[in-house]
Length: 290
Ligand code: ATR
Image (cartoon, rainbow, N blue to C red; front, side):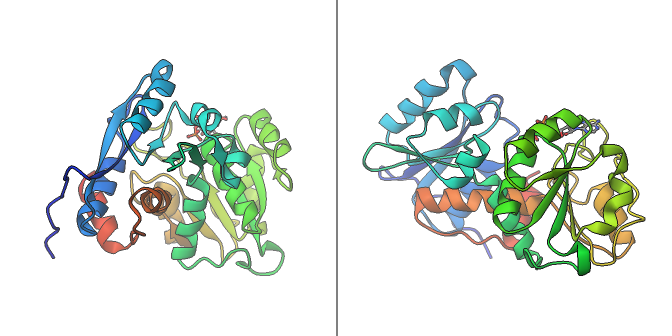
C-alpha cells in the first residue's frame, strides 16, 4: 500500500531530535513515516546542537511553536535539569529523552527508553513479571551499568521484576544498584554460570553491536534454563551473535528495534495527538532505511 505524501502546511505540528552529533539518528525516518501513514500535517527534523547551545535551542524551539523534541547524547541530563515537570521514569533515571512543550509554557520531561523496552517485551509475548519457572520466575539478569542499563532497570523493577546487575567495571554496577531500591549485583566473571537462576537476560552494553567494542560478543548460554528469554537492546545487527546463539539453543529472543520504536511511540502521541502502531510494516520501513 503506497504511503501518502507528507503534508506540511502553515499549520503543521513540528518536532525534532536534539543531539550532537545527530546525523546517525533514526528518529526522523521513523517519525516522518508515521506522519505520512497517519496523514498528520507535520514534520520532524534533526537538530544538531552543541552542548553549550542546548538551553538556547530548547527555548528557541518553544518560541517557534514546536510541540516538543527528542533528546539524545549528550543532552539527556541537561534536558532533565531544564524540564519543569518530570514523569516517574525521568525522576528515577535523572535523564530525559522526550520534551513536551505544554500550552501553559511549561516543559514536561519524559524518559521513555526503559518503558519502550518493557513495551517491546510485552509485544513479543513476554509475560511480566510472571515469566519463568520455579526459582527463576520474575528474575532478570542485566548486563551493563550505563545510561541504557539504568533506564531498563528502572522500568523492569517498576514492572515487578527482580533485577540483578552485572558489569565489567564492578564499581559502576554497585553505584547504580545503590541508587535504586531492590537491585542486586553479581560478578561479571560469574554471570554465565548463574544463568539458570533467571527468566530473562538483557544486554544493555554495546557488546555485539556492528562497529562496537566487540562485535562478535557471544557468551556461553550453556547454563540457561529452557524458558530463558534473551533480549538485546542492540539493533544493528538486527540479530546479534548473542541472540543467534540463544536461537540455536531454542531460546526465545527479543531484538533492540522494538525498544527504539516503542520509546518513540510515546513522544509521537504527545506531540502529534495520534497513537502510532508499532507493527511489521513500521519495522520493515525503518529497517529498509538503515
Ligand atoms: P550507555 O549510556 O549507552 O549505556 P555507557 O554509559 O558508555 O553507554 O555504557 C556502556 C556499557 O557497555 C557499560 O556497561 C560498559 O561497561 P563498563 O562500565 O565496564 O565500561 C559496557 N561495555 C562497553 N565496552 C565493553 C567491553 N569491551 N566489555 C565489557 N563491557 C563493555
